[in-house]
Length: 556
Picture 1: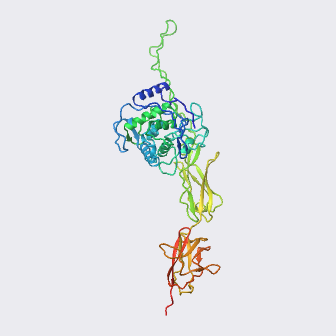
Picture 2: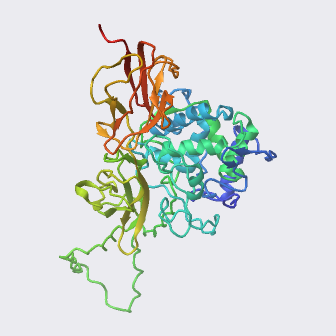
Picture 3: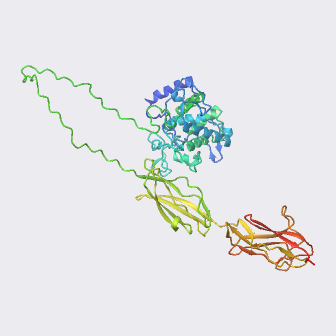
């Protein structure tokens, strides 16, 4: 994945040496011992190998080096309902804290042996993004603006060429770390999760990112209650000893106590906007006063007038200076906005609708972008009003939702495309399918009582209809069996029977409905045994019908 960058620190620390000294000082008082070498050769996950220590989820992007206070927080961190109290640094924004604890709960249910503590996620989130820029997230947990690391172009960081077409990081040349847990797109493609159940895996969402980070840290047979395994996990996230010590310091700090604060009020690391930032330019110093002119030498010129006329005050310009125009936003990417499985039965509406989101080149939602949705392939499925192509404009949040699709009578797969952009088209393709109707009901078309004398044939034929939501289903396979008991059906060896093609008595037949779902059974004959019998009709889809047959001598 990415090469390690050793002791490189985020801009804002004075120097590497100063930050390293601070880390070392803290290590002597409250930080863990130096990381141990990973000697476990059998680390692995169900989906593949455990991330190696020479790789990183973040691409070894810069990170915050601020260390926690040496004072212990006032309140234990066992509950999300704690009051807003204690040191400011101990506060974690509500949605961010909820996401960490939700990830811990889910991992406890799916990978209990890992023993992931939510405080470890909090420590990494603090170091990577300052808890999502102090909790600047919306109600669903998505950051209000993208958090992007620097371009991984090999200049001071790893060299990672673009792997996502700029879909996540708006950079089609090199990858960048994305979101509150700073995943690079190639790592997110493998480890991304849907932590808030909205059908999307979004690295900019704290619930998705926290769960993904938890699964990444728990890869293989790690037990994070063991110091060595926890060190290996953190190093796999960002392979740097400085990084490990900083994360460990916050981990220990949060374990001693924390409390919940409202979203957007968390404390950011010094000199940080929560993501990658550039240093502010140094202002030019302003002179404190105007120097007095030196004395005029005698005889070198006229003496100044005791009451010189003050210079005229210049008038301000009547026309204010014009500001340079703000360049218009440019469409950067088109992404899936949570479209579910597109499938429907013949003639019915699709429950899911195609949803896309347009983003600008800076990663912000791109509004008022025309998106053309088209049905492609051998199908008679259409949008509303029988249209195969429709155009929808994205809203303020950058999303566009296609009209509902209605399945035709042709079964099979087809495609739905979403296209946006002019000079450079952005295209998404979805697979959809229409399945054949399957009978859910089997019923007689009349209510005649079916009787016959011993040794005679039944005067009336059995007529049934297989249907789906009231519409006849053609070519439905129906099995007709004379049974002994409706509760525990088994083929009867006496009573009514059919004749096969050779005139031999049989008590089971395989039949098929006609074009309108109708089926007329062949003649039924009675043997010499009087009594009441049951004919059972079933379809492969589970529709069932029982018919009563009576064999009795005619009345005298």
